[in-house]
Image (cartoon, rainbow, N blue to C red; front, side, top):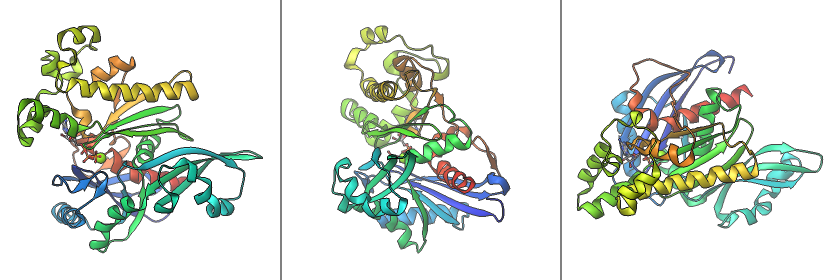
Length: 363
Ligand SMILES: Nc1ncnc2c1ncn2[C@@H]1O[C@H](COP(=O)(O)OP(=O)(O)OP(=O)(O)O)[C@@H](O)[C@H]1O
Ligand SMILES: [Mg+2]
């Protein structure tokens, strides 16, 4: 954006938290963060990736805007990752006009629900004389409309609906960290997601149900705690108590898995869930290495509230045998206030939504 300035209000409605970033775009795509805010939403408001109680969400959003003083700019938002399909599809070469006409029929085989009930979008990744490869994005109509409804209630027009994996890649690209393929593991409450890409490609996007909530539920079931106390316990102890570690996470040496197996085995309460995440990450990395890059990914990043679980980063590092970095979504943004690095994992998606718009404007 060379002339004029834009203001974006980016909103991520999660199953546990709503995160909002209010951003002013200065000259040459530099972004100035005016406000950041996060508020939790009651359980059962978002169920299986659909907003069940749109009024509660609209209310919470209104509260956030009022409390931190946001007069919404262009609204950027996202939908849950449940029933989100992101796939590379090869098609015979055709014009964009033809593609927009036939896409619904062409992709029927690639999505597990009828294309009739899906909202489709695509991006042309490569094309040759005969073929083209597109990135296909499909979201179920009822999912997407449930995410639009809170804004309808508030009488706000949505400027862009993006998807979380793209937004996570955009934040890295905005920080010039996508010259080589990278993986991002985002651990939320309802689940986790993995995306692997570089600045021209999305190689893989997957989600699975192990996230912060499963860890809390495991503590409730096995220790008889109520929800609040299970959350407190989880945040205070992390994996530490099950690993017999007392040091802060960043100082823990990579865990020796053999030792762990013998001391806690699968009898740990939440350790098995951490291994689920490690397995999913390993499967995705293997897939990428087999299909695209025998050297694997250059970097692996983690983000999302669930990535704050103490001991998780080092467990994952030793399982995938590669260093993992905490994604810092604040890099390359200007701030009007002091930011608290502790909250960084909650803001990768919203800042990525804005990054994606600025990158689009530049290209
Ligand atoms: N210090 C911590 N240790 C462990 N877990 C944590 C910590 N801080 C936050 N969490 C967990 O992070 C989760 C919330 O993360 P986040 O805000 O990214 O989820 P969400 O976006 O609402 O969920 P989703 O994207 O899955 O719908 C909760 O399960 C919460 O318990
Ligand atoms: Mg989330």
